[in-house]
Image (cartoon, rainbow, N blue to C red):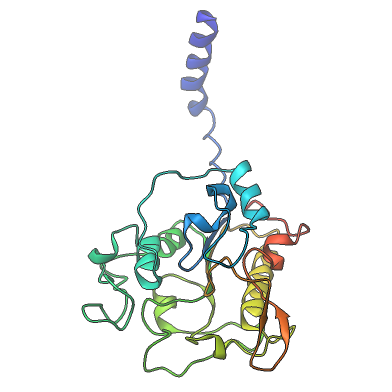
Amino acid sequence: MKHLIILLAALGIALPLHSAPAAAPRPNIIFILADDLGFEALGCYGGKEFKGLGPVRTPNLDAMAASGMKFKECFSCPVCSPARSEALTGKYNFRVGFPRIMGKPGVVEQLDFKAHPTVALRLKEAGYVTAIVGKWHLGPPCTKGKEPEIIPQSAETDTDYAHPRACGFDRQCLFTGGHLSTYGEPKPGKYTPELLQKWALHFITSRKGKAEPFFLYYPHRRCIPRRSTRRTRWGKTTRRISPTSSSIWTNRSVKFWPS
């Protein structure tokens, strides 16, 4: 065994003289952020029942945790803008100007991407195609600002906001409404969370066979858990679209292709 190790070490030194080592494959990255989600709302963290809403049922997330990596120790600021600023910059939220939610005293108007480059900008430099779908909340477009609330009308159409683009995202489909009443009518093809999820799936499938790897940032507007049904202002009881019940979690035909 000792002689084998020496031989392999010698080969490792000699090989670069004849050919350059193959570049390590770059994985596709999908980062899903759930608003205001606590560990007590997930079965994989021991959640049983959540604040009178009934039993915790997160089978798909539990399966992901069982087959992947689950953090047991972490620091999180579990509200909209602070959590997003930390996730995208890798810095404490108060260091990048978001000690609280956007629009509150002491909060900057928008993320300064020059002073605090985002992971999207860094990945673009590394040759990644970047995309965001969901809720921005780090500057215009925002949910409590002066801009009009805009709801995506189609899962095939991109939005075009300057600030997310400057922060490093090549493509975007962003929702700027602030409340449930602006989610659109809860019908197939019209409910905003469903449109956002379909846009995400379309983006993923569009990258099949492409040379460049992709980074998809998917910050949800809705948090979980949620009741499986709800009474709407249209007088109908409908199934709520949530990360634990929607197609992006349950569609087993979706594959995440390597670059």
